[in-house]
Length: 140
Image (cartoon, rainbow, N blue to C red):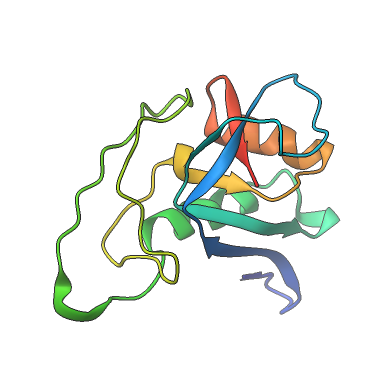
């Protein structure tokens, strides 16, 4: 969440752990996800909202960056996990070892191409494409 100087809520992002999502190419019509290829994903952005008067100020980008760098809580034992990331420009990602389905893993920095967006609006899809880059976005 981001609060403006006045104390009002200016932006909010809600996220959840994922194991997979669907790859949607830029320009392809979004008619649901069933026909799209499944690919590994680590984090789902279920809601991303910025108050109208605060849009185009980089708040959505700042929220997602904060989520990518500090996403979750430590899980018992401090086990080390290995992650093989796809290139920063989004192409269909190479396989990686996703976090378990109930938690994010403290200490992992998520790559932009590990974020999936839940049923993005037209504006949301444009934002996601600009944020992630590459040839498409992950949706769920």
